[in-house]
Amino acid sequence: MTTIITHLDADGVCSASLVRMVKEFHNSYVYFSHPAGLLHDLRVIPKDDLIICDIALDQRSYLEIFQIFEEFTKEYSIIYIDHHAQPEGMPNKVINVHDPNVSATELTYRYFYHQLPKRADFIALLGSICDYLDDSPLMQRLMHHYERRTLFLDAGLLAQGLKKYGKKAHYEKLRDLIKAFSHGKSPCDIPELTQAAINATKSDNSKRSLILSLYHTEKNIAWIQDPPSMSYSKIAHWIMGDSGKHLGLAIRTLNSKRLLVDITIRGWRKIDLRKFIPEIAMKLGGSAGGHANAVGVRLPQKKCQLFLRMLDNHPIFSTLEPIAQIDDLIPLSFSNNLIM
Ligand SMILES: [Mn+2]
Image (tube, rainbow, N blue to C red):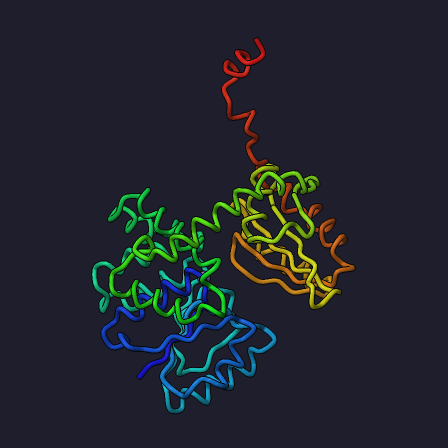
């Protein structure tokens, strides 16, 4: 047998659905995990061949995970499919499928391509769209197998529906979802997911104008402190877009650990955020990780203001073209009409 361990976001769910489409893994059991929980989960799940998808290797537990992988591969196989930054080295026998530029779903699709049914391209696209990584050459090519608007409807239903579904209490439902996807169903075929997506979207929409009234701007960044609870990545995205600044930051004071803040950062895809943000975070006793366009930072709370200042004054911004402002994109003749 083979056991799948995957992340419980859309990229993870789609990766696992693709694995389950491979005949050999039709009945593989799916466990859900996350970077901070992987070490613990590897210790408790029954020994088996493993396929691990979309779970970053946490720096703090990396050495122990490395040892467990080594131990595992004496008797079992491990295929590790991921697109997050990777600490150096992986035990020899681990099949390491890694590319930081595409989604884990795309990597899974590529790795198992010759064993997948035709319809697998649809799931590959959904996972990639939901992880904002649908601009790779392969995904752009596959996108033309479908019709954009319908494809994005299904992707939106999945991403939004998982906000409710993607929690511990719903693991069994997530397994059913993966089963349904691997049998050719789409998000719109699953009424509960669809309803959850609509509710989540209505709730997001109702908070948008309030969120946009609460953020602050500096020269290059827009930030918001402890906004009403909803997806922090969406908030960071909204304030980035609304402000026209290079970055949007949503800062959350951690309830359980009063002395820390988590900062979710989004950019316009003009720079690789990993090239300068982790460095600043580390200088201030924090840590950071993520993708070119989406980074999360954890910092001591008392360093938060300094972090914002250092980030805002980073020389990298002077090398970038300014973000186009809406007024600049409206032809002058139209603006004149309005004044008259
Ligand atoms: Mn992912």
